[in-house]
Each structure stands twice: as C-alpha cells, then as structure tokens.
Amino acid sequence: MLLQIRYPLLQSIRRLFSNKNEAIHRIVYSSSTNIWFNLATEEWLSKTIKPNEHILFLWQNDKCVIIGRNQNPWKECFLERMESDGVLLARRRSGGGAVYQDLGNTCFTFLISQANHKLDKHLNSKILLDALSSEFNIEARAEGRNDLVYGPQKRKFSGSAYQNTQQFALHHGTLITNVDTTAMKKYLNPNKEKLMSKGVDSVQARVINLCEINSSINHKDLCSAIEKSYRQTYSNDSIPPAQALSREVLDSIPELHAAYKLYNDLQWRFGQTFSFTHEYERRFPWGTISIGIVSERDGIIHTCEIYSDSLYVNMINRLKENFIGQIYTGESIRQACQRARNQVETEQEKSMIDDVQAWVLTQI
Image (cartoon, rainbow, N blue to C red; front, side, top):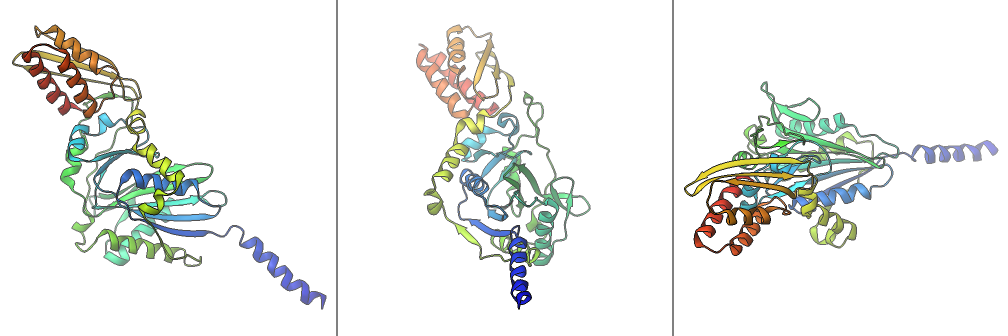
C-alpha cells in the first residue's frame, strides 16, 4: 500500500522537475509597418521575455533604411534623397550592415530567454529554409555567418544580425520577396570613398527577390509558411495560437512607448556615429568653394572650414558660423542656410547661399 502511494508521488515529482525547463512558445505578428515602432516592439518583447520563453516575431516595414549599431549614416546612405522621399532612417541595436526595406520584405525575429536555453541560429535558418522549400518549392541554403542564398551564383535574399545579453538572445533578419531594387541603389551608398570614417562598412551583395523564383510568394503567405515550419520544428511542444499586436494596443504600454521615442530620436539615429570627415568642392560662376565638415561621434558639426575665392567674405563667414553646432542632416542644413541668408545684405549673396544649399544637400 505504501509503495502504491509513493509511486504516483515520485512520478509527480519527476514531472515537476522535467517541466521546469520546458520551452514556452509564443508567435507574434505586428500590424504596424513603421520601422521605429517595430524595432520598439522587438525591444519590448526582449525586455519582457519570461524564463524558458521562445518568441517568433514576424513583421514588415514600409520604406526605410536600417543601419547597424556602429554604422555611420552619412557613409552608408544618401540621407537627403531619403528625407525628400519620406524614407525613414533607423538604427538597430544589433550589428551588421545597412539594408533598405519596403513592403517587399518580410522581417523575422527569433527571440529566446537565456535562463535555461541557448539560441540556435542554424535551427532558425532551417525553419526559414524549410518554409520556402515546402510551401514555395524554393530550394536555398545558408551561406557564411548570416546569409541565405539561392542558386550556383549564391544570390542573397536574406541577411541576419544577432544580439546577446545575459537575459536574452536575438536573431533577426529579412527575407526579400519583392523589394524595389532601384530604391536600394538610390538610397544605399556604394561609394566607399565618400567619407573617411572609423565606422563599419556595409557589404554590397548581389541580391535576388524571391518572387523571381516563385511569382506567387507574398508577405502573408510567407509568414504563414514560417509559422507552420516553426510549429513543425517544435511539434513536441505546446504552442498556442499566434498573437496579433496592433498599434493601438501597444501604444498603451509605457515601456514600448519609451522604446519608440528612442528609435525615433535624432540623437539615437544620427548621434551614435564614430567621428568622420566629409570634404567636397565645386566651381560656381561666382567662384570656387570647398567645404570641410568634421563630426565627432554624435553627428554634430563640430568643425566647419569653408574656403572660397569669392569676393563675398561675409557670406562665407555667415555660412560657416551657422553650420557649426548643427546636426549634419538636410533639414538642419536648410535651416542654417536660411539663417545665413537672413544675415547677409545683398541679393547676390542670398543667391549664392541658395546655390550652396542646393549643392550641399546633394552631398549628404
């Protein structure tokens, strides 16, 4: 009789300890296409992750350029073109290179609590590759540290980046389904001589849209395929239905709102930059002008030297004075030029400043 009582008790104790480290899965979709908001959501998920929790986060962004944690936006992007076309600049916390995204991209995040588990980036890649193979008949493979490629020419359609902390590990990236490749060339800077910088360079890789392989692929179906592959991979675990996070719901969460303010902040996007120098020169009908900009890590113009053979010394001095202390963006340069314009007396000087403004904006 005593054994009969003890045996179920021992079974219960074993179950208690065996379930202690059992993975808890969560699949999350974002309904927002704002890059700052989605990065904030990703950060909120990582900071609130529970012990043993595994999260698959699927999302999509409208037109934006995302740079790595230690990259220089002036080196990697054509900022004035982006500003004019409404393309957002975002800086992520993870490393890696600059990427252009639009609604032809599908973004994924594998997030895991490191309390009792470790991130397996090879398994994550397999989940993505299995989704493409089983649902779209696309046979691809992992290449190098963080790329997924197709065909003998190893054309890249996915890149990843990673972040590790004591609390969590994160593996995120993008799958290119039907991205505007002309926009990639327009907004990402392939000219490695543009700036002298201590930052990290992006690697310009030959890419392929997945729709070139299978024209039926789209964001919604691809997300469903990834979710299905994820569930099959962890078929021994209990996985609840996917959760859709709306902008309205998440706006009410103070921690997420604070993260959104950070990613939207000019200081975060431009100020997390190593020191750099930008020099350029042009001949105008009224004279030659050379400009040298020096910024020290925070994206602010600390030193500005302007050399010219123009007879209008006052105009040159006013430009220099108004450039110093400004963040090196198109809008700040416009405002600085307008202030200088208001400080000169002749219409000819004002016209020269307009020339300089139009020219400088093409260099940023």
